[in-house]
Image (cartoon, rainbow, N blue to C red; front, side, top):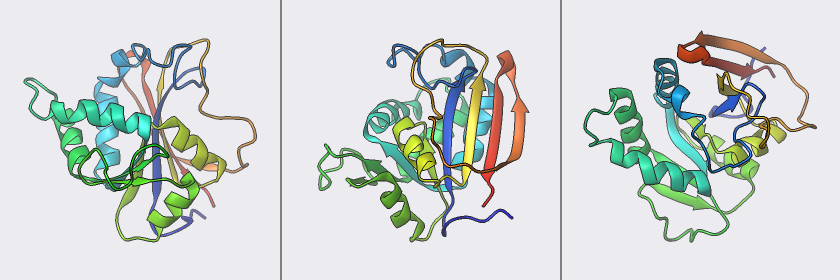
Length: 201
């Protein structure tokens, strides 16, 4: 039986290498992602996630990266319509940024709430509100916290056929044991594989 742990569904999205890493030895070097991130399967996958989400949940570092780049895509000449759609959604959606350093009274982005509390508590607060999915966008620290607390309802992974050979892994030892249902699987260009799992509770 597949049941959620509260009202709203928490969906996490992450790109990983075939050896299970979300970043290489140099975490700032994301060049390994680019050939795969602009494939049709990756763009369609992201679209399928944000269309049902009414809140974006991000860590501070990812918020700075996403919100520093994506709004500029809206008016970018020749941009893929799916990228423009995601950019518009990101600008317009309610955003929750987990941070102990940003001023909660002066969020640097519109429609943004800065929260300084443990990830699981912040998600419990969101589950208690009305709305669609809470989408966690590639924020590894947030996703790892949610996996450790068994608070992920849908786990979306884009697997790129590359070994990074070093760098942080998404799945740490000691995660709660549990089963997941494969909801969808899609293979795309360059061997990109999109996998979506729902937590069985």
